[in-house]
Image 1 (tube, rainbow, N blue to C red):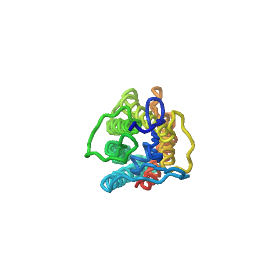
Image 2 (tube, rainbow, N blue to C red):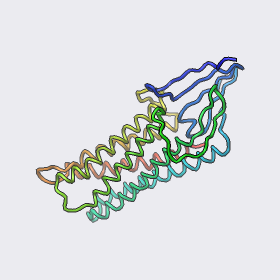
Image 3 (cartoon, rainbow, N blue to C red):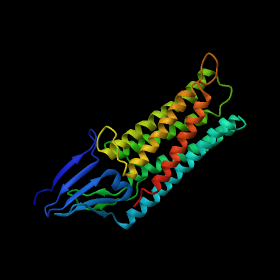
Image 4 (cartoon, rainbow, N blue to C red):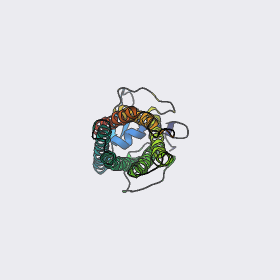
Length: 280
């Protein structure tokens, strides 16, 4: 008996959706985000108008729920702490050490959320060849899978959180020249923002199965990505406004820098709340 007919979709070299036509007439659809977040395939029998979900085993679903809860909680808490740090800078006593400490605590939660997001990809159930059921492998703490779009998106996100950590650690340094501030604090901030935006673009490509973003207002996963991407954009606006002028030693716009961080952080907290419901 030959292999079932298979149709692949995705962005560039990445496959984000596979459709099989089984010999018995059933159509099986695997979608990258749906499988790794909810642990399901879609199966449609001959003559059926809509597909029915086919879930992975109980062990895999428990794993997905646990990882999702940890990642969601980390992003909610990290976003709340970043918003608090920005509020202290804008409305508080002006003590830079206090706001830097709150930012750093938030950054640790973002690190956790980024790494657990990567673990979600590495330990999600995988589709079996030929349109079979989802298969759950043993637990992995690390893996290198650059030809998987979900892995690439979450890996870039995790690296972005680590780069932000450099920026947050350097913000504790005192007595720096303007050039040193821009090199040690502002530059890592910009790099982290770029990585967050790249990660979000890749996440859109995973959901849309193409390189360009799409509108899928009925998809909870789309809303999670869209809200987080808007937060990343606000972080970028904040970073641009936080550049220190060499001639005066002052920021381009302190208000925009603080408000951009505050509103962007709120977006990440909202995205974390939405992510809590994107589970099996």
